[in-house]
Length: 355
Image 1 (cartoon, helix red, strand yellow):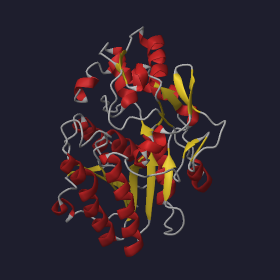
Image 2 (tube, helix red, strand yellow; image 1 turned 180 degrees about the vertical axis):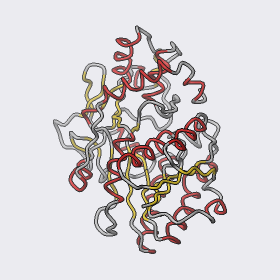
Image 3 (cartoon, helix red, strand yellow; image 1 turned 120 degrees about the horizontal axis):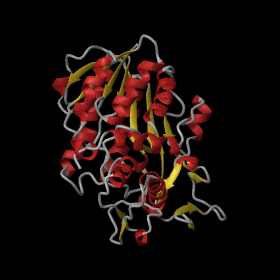
């Protein structure tokens, strides 16, 4: 079997490539990347040592895909990953569209041409911001917690958010590109007869992630705390109580591996994948963990709200567990320890990440 992975030199793409090669004997992997993300060049040699063929290509250019060999599956791990993309930062709204949506058509045409199955790594940020901010929450020490004492809207339970939760706008420009990408991938698969899986991924984290203040927050927070960089609790009264769950790409690889072993084209196609309630932490709780590991470092409160921020979201992966027997195996404590150990070995990691 041959698999084509886009964004192969990013944290998620390279981790998936490594894990899939380890999991599936005889698997051939072709990795594509345009290497524009700061730090991505560091993963090229690592992939080659694993026997993974690397091709420098930009999926926004259809001509870059014309002469690629046929693959059995395409895993799309290439995207601008920040929810603030197109609104804040160097990436314009048009560039965000080109990165996350226009390029997708080139990949889907490749799948159409070769009858290759397609796996889209989508995002938990396809969900309605207004619906998320309207969830009943209570304060549990230094973290927000879902209040399950009364009725809850469709798609949310004590286990978290599932695929049925509202995707009504606004969901952010970034979330809009990912939701549109889901629809186009599913329509292409239906029209041209190739299998498509969509995985709405929660926060992915682990050693070697290129963390910034608006993406890869677990990695950024640990590295910045260790280096005594300024840290801020943005919005939500400057409390740091906002909560997200996290899981490692090697755990995601187990789900992807199960999906590429199934070629059915009917039934459920969209799955939620995340760390779940047991792997969730607030920023304040991460700070407490870092204080114990590295010594005290106090983030400053910043009461100004930031676009698209939400107070709480954990992912309910029950459907993936039911259909594929999948659950993340790496605990949040193990994730943080892995990130911290990497940070201690790489004192310049924030600079490598472009921070």
